Amino acid sequence: MIWHATIWVMWKARNDNIFKGVNFAIDDIVEEVKVLSWRWMLSRLHIPACLFFEWCWNPQCAVVIAATFIGVFAAAGIFL
Image (cartoon, rainbow, N blue to C red; front, side, top):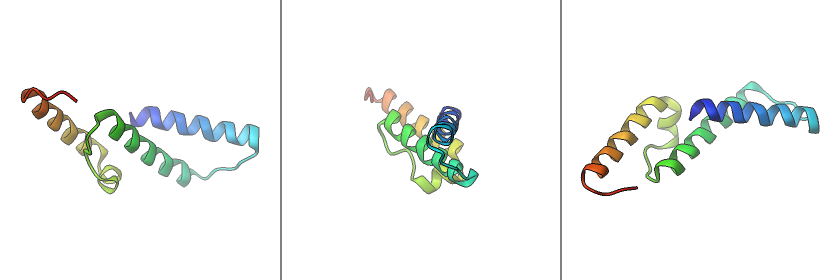
C-alpha cells in the first residue's frame, strides 16, 4: 500500500511539474505519501486501525494491529 501511494504521488508531482510548471519539495511528497497511504488503509479496512501519528511513527505496526482486528472479527463470524 505504501509502495502504491509513493508511485502515485511521484507520478502526480511529475505531471504537475511537466504540465503545470509546479515545483515540488521532497518533504511535501513524503508527507503526501504518509497521508494518502493512511487514508487508503482506513478506507480499505473499514475500521480505524490507528491514528495518523501512529501511522507516521510505525506503519508496519499499525497494519499488524489492523490484521489482528480483522482476524478477531472473522473468528467471531463478523465480516467487514
